[in-house]
Image 1 (spheres, rainbow, N blue to C red):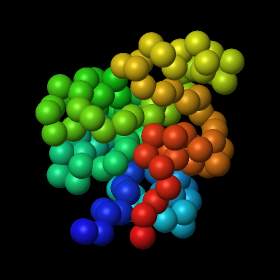
Image 2 (image 1 turned 180 degrees about the vertical axis):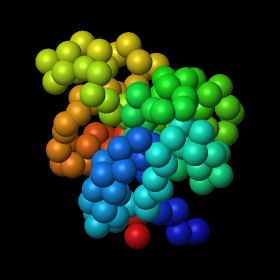
Image 3 (image 1 turned 30 degrees about the horizontal axis):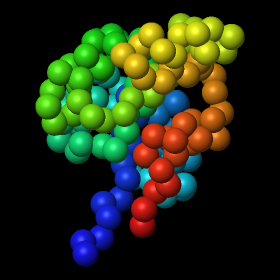
Length: 130
């Protein structure tokens, strides 16, 4: 039996501090992590690396995060990749209501804790493999 592929996560956010801090936390947790600061870069990495999950900001400088998600969903090789939207355009109070309206994907209001994100990741793709 072949060893299971290490689970990987792509973080697409125009805030470098968010990408860096979340990447560091998730790497220490055991996931392989890729980072992108623009939608175009995120699409390129998603198509090349086929991550296990994508954390995607909705407000990006070049392509809106929802447009990135649509392109991923319309591509046969990336359409099954779970997406967690991470955004400052909703509040924590609105988070429960808004979650079901964005391409059937989870939406999380910024700021959020690394532990909150980790819990969602584990719900989608499970624990990292070594």
